[in-house]
Amino acid sequence: MTRIPGPPTLFERLLRRFTTIVSMATLIPFYTLCLACIGLSLTPSVMFFHWVSERTAETAAWQRYLAQGSALGVCYLIYGLTLIFLVPAVNLLIGGRLRAWRGTYHSGMSIRWYMHNGLAYIVRFTFLEFITPTPLNQLYFQMMGMKVGRGTYINSSHISDPSLITLEEKVTIGGSAVIVGHYGVGGFLVLAPVVIRQGATIGLRATVMGGTEIGAGAKILPNSVVLPKTRVPAGETWGGVPAQKIDVRKLDSGEAAPPIAVGAE
Image 1 (tube, one colour):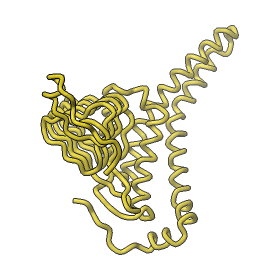
Image 2 (tube, rainbow, N blue to C red):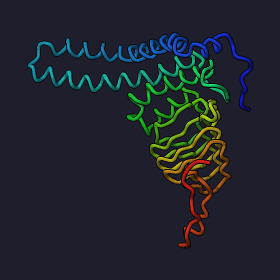
Image 3 (cartoon, one colour):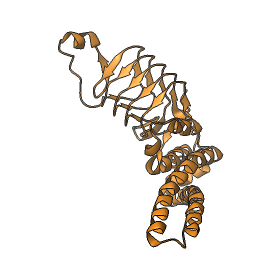
Image 4 (cartoon, rainbow, N blue to C red):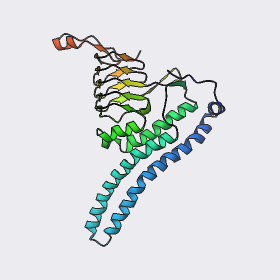
């Protein structure tokens, strides 16, 4: 059930009246926290690099450069592996797990939503692509609050609001598919869980938006867009922009497929 906010708190009244000042006062500490996450994740890498530099200080120049270059590559790996464990811990400590909600952009929950995704994007834009798809990216999403069933395969890093997403068993998320647990409408931000049932497949570069439920064994074709609050029944194949049901039997028989509208409702 979507939580509708009550009367605005003092913080929210100040935020709406002095949006820029209060936003900066709130977000500067958060940006500092993000930088601290990056710095702490880099610390083991810096230690390793200095260790290699000290061990190769008396060697020939080419050997020293080779060792230091190789060490920098290892340092990046150490940074990324440290980051994927540190960020979820920080997200948990600041209460970053989200729930269904609808309200204005200038509110305490919208800032919490921003922080949750801000932390997630540090990992996404600096390291996540290099561990996608492996069990490590699935572990990272689970630590960020995503519910992931056994046998599920996630071949995408383009996922926002992981704590609002449920992937049941044997779900396949295709390459660069986009899954987001929010959308904007009429000046409001809506946080809406996404549920993808057992055995469903989300095709290459398809987009699944907030409040959507994909039924068991259903298929979303590549490059399709599933609009907010859509319910795709079990076993059906959907495609297009916006996505709608496609009669696979007609496609198999060579008959013309029904026209698929382009655009949003």
